[in-house]
Structure formats: C-alpha cells, structure tokens
Image 1 (cartoon, one colour):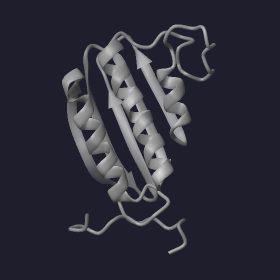
Image 2 (cartoon, rainbow, N blue to C red):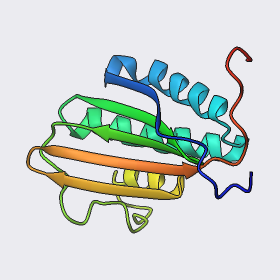
Image 3 (cartoon, rainbow, N blue to C red):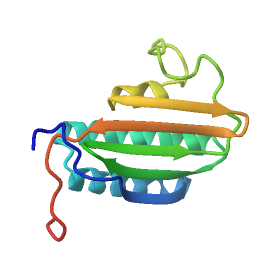
Length: 145
C-alpha cells in the first residue's frame, strides 16, 4: 500500500451529543479513537486540542451543547462539530492570531493550528466546524489495546 490508495469507505467512529458536563469524557474518547486509528503522538495531541477548542466553543458560544461526528475516510481522520448557536461573527473565524492583549478569541485559531484542515459554515441557526488530519500510521487491529 502506498498511502495514496483508499483503505476503504467512511468508517464512523463516534457520534454523540455533548454539553459542559461531557467535555472531559468526550476529549478522552476522541483521544482513544485517534490513537486507535493511527494518528502519531504529536498529531494526536494537536488534533485532540483542536477538537477540544471547537467543542468548548460550541458549549460557550453555541447554545450550551452540540453534536460531534468523528470518522475515518481513506487516510484521514475527520471531526465535525455542530451547534445551534447564533453563529460566529465576521472577523472571529480564527484565521489570524489574536493580539496578546486581546481577551478571548483564540479557540478557532488554536484549532486551526492543531489540524491540517478546518472548514467553517456558520449562520443564524448555528455553526458547523469540520477538522481533518492525515493518519500517519496503520490503525490498531480490533481487540488490541
């Protein structure tokens, strides 16, 4: 296998609703899934930080709750976070690093630093943030730690 060949169709790994009280267990589940699917140590750490920033933003700014979808497709791990909030104001999409004296506004910027791709769809009925990261290692076979 050369790495460019598909390893199969989309494989759903995790789908769940979350709120403030479930952020920590959710972060642990994302970490377990990412490790099992073959993210390297550094990529796994950064991806989990990125997902944590986006899910925390959904809770803080997107209506207090959200829904997460985590899946693998080919050699990429994807995470989509959906909330029902008022949308993200223009200029707060995390494309530019906030000034050191700026209060807040770092979540999406940090998330962008922790993954290879981040797309954002936002409007008055909520936001959808999708992150993805290349998988550098082979998945851990089922039944192995």
